[in-house]
Image (cartoon, rainbow, N blue to C red):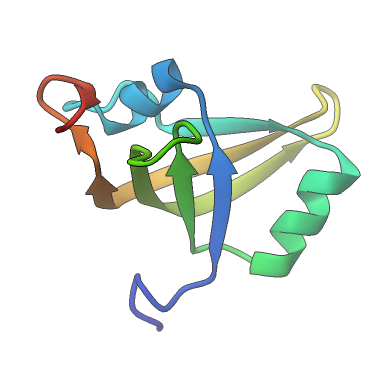
Length: 105
């Protein structure tokens, strides 16, 4: 089994409120939702089946708060038209204070 850092990585942008909830201690958000579109299905196909890493970026101007989280399962809900990325461990956090739930620095 590959190490956590050699796994394929999917990079996504995420709003501050959801970013903070994923990184909160204890975690308040364990599933990241995406629209089940051809765009997201192609992106998921490129990284392959779980487990893979999800790199979350919050913002555009450096230093951008970012985190890498493992995805342990992906559900496709065709009725709701959504993908559910079930999140595992937080592997890395940059430019974010997890205790205060705000950008660091």
